[in-house]
Length: 243
Image (cartoon, rainbow, N blue to C red; front, side):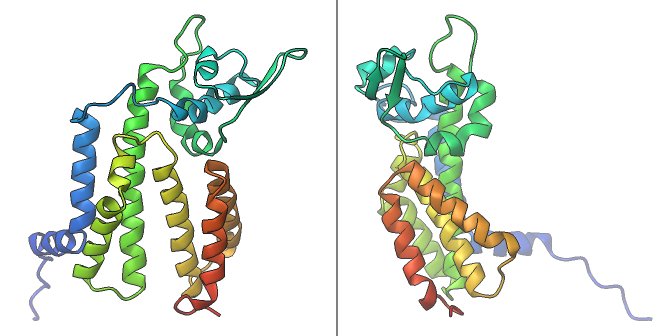
């Protein structure tokens, strides 16, 4: 009788996986360390400066009112774009895209008790880890796109390291992770990944709707992302397998 097939060599498989994804794993380890120990001299809380304006859309959505007059911190930041004193309505000059992307994580952490601080400690901690997670996701998407474009493993790993460290994105996924940069990179990276899948004939019925939604979200995160969205659409015909 033929001998039973040998079980797969898990150690060898783990080695191949590690070699193939070495750069993504390295970025993940570095981002986790930076989030756990914050080995840098931050100028304030994890959610600070313009990030407060982005983040407080979460609070406004939970209260059911989109007036920002009740947040004195926004006045200090000069983040009130317009104030209608007669109606008691204040407009936040910062767009809501970051808050929309983070809403499922941040909403349960908002402290809505009377007298509670505008931003809770749990929200600060979640902001650190959420941004680091997006950074790793951007690297994973970059690796997947590189492989789809025919890059070899060494070139894929080099590209991931260039994305994380050569562009400054590691900084904006850790130290300044509350700003729009890593959020924009994630949404646009996902849009690019979906586009390459569609060009390779792997599109599904939801792909077009998801891509349109991501494009809109990218613009809500930062208005100038509209240029990147237009650029990605313009490149679509030249994608491998594209029309």
